[in-house]
Amino acid sequence: MENFPVINLENINGEERKAVLEKIEDACENWGFFELVNHGIPLELLDTVERLTKEHYRKCMEQRFKEAVASKGLEGVQGEIKDMDWESTFFLRHLPHSNISEIPDLSEEYRKAMKDFAQKLEKLAEELLDLLCENLGLEKGYLKKAFCGSKGPNFGTKVANYPPCPKPELVKGLRAHTDAGGIILLLQDDKVSGLQLLKDGQWVDVPPMRHSIVVNLGDQLEVLTNGKYKSVEHRVIARTDGTRMSIASFYNPAGDAVIYPAPALLERKTQVIDKVYPKFVFEDYMRLYATLKFQPKEPRFEAMKGVNTV
Image (cartoon, rainbow, N blue to C red; front, side, top):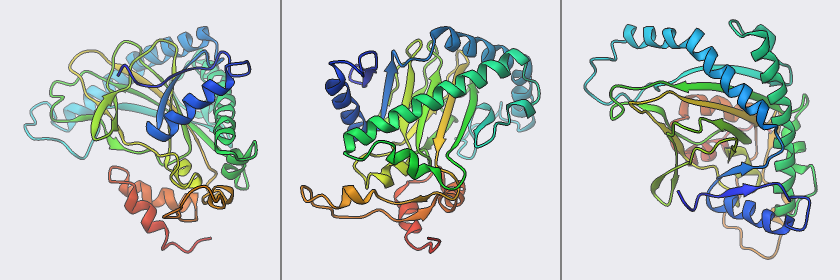
């Protein structure tokens, strides 16, 4: 945990830019995750989003979750549960069109805060993609353009709470998986931990840190970089104490975006390329992912080689 990459963006446009870019490069190549501080999103907005998310859970979601657990008879279960997650969630869509006004039970204050938060996260995601382009030697805007398709990128948020679990050894808050999409930005609980990533065969805690944004890379960035950067398996451990809040926003390609390794990376003479990732339409990948989310990613990539949609 003490080595987990924490990156301070405060001086990204100053004399420390080279050092910050090197830290980001190392995190992308060796962790697939990093934690951002001084990211430019107002701290008061983060506090408001956290307060309203926790209020909404207590008022609208908590009882529903308890009733769902009771209806499935999970209190008395003895064996490991492998087909469900101990989480209470709802989803918001921001791009290409917002559905925030259509979600029931949200206060006007909460809708406004989430809209504001999403706009700031969208800007941060695009800034990060350009920093990755700089590290990769790709032209500015390349990754965003690769995500665009005909309607522009998809961007949405999964708002989750992980309630106390009486038998955390039998069920995960969220089973191990890699994320299918592009770049993911997470505002997580700063008091209740539970998120872990797989590094060198060991599960490592992603440390809760007040006002930080946790970033991780999805499968599409692994394909676009031809494996130079990797999506990394992660999970959420259920806990007996405390409800953990998680607000994960996914900046993903458009459904009709064609994803393939950046040609500039394949043409370099400085490295030996032993394999080339497949070319495919993102929505075809998502159809496959929907059935195989909790299984290893490599067979998904392999299967896409046989899908002739491009």
